[in-house]
Image: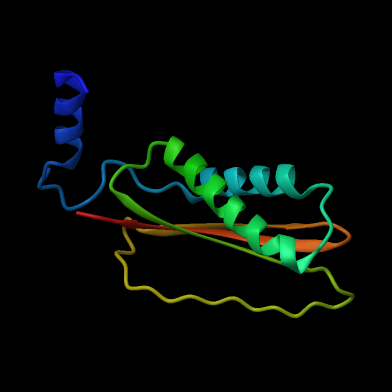
Length: 129
């Protein structure tokens, strides 16, 4: 590690004394990122429970890396991907609760359906000090 890289690393973790992030989390932008990843990865997949467990973890990691690449700094990201069988009349409900700052924290979600499965991807962005 060069001295310049070390300085950049130190600057990243040094306290900035800012109470809010530089830019607000853009839910609509992340919504399209989630949609693209789910569509590209699941377009020809069929529902198999033993495979979908690992697939949901892989998709969550891909979504997290894609969101990080968008440059939202000072946010803690929580990514959840759920995959289920697309039955005749599936009834699934998701809920979540969190204490957050409504002026800067946000979330984004998108879903994907094909003949065999459905997938729901959610990204929660909570600002950190």
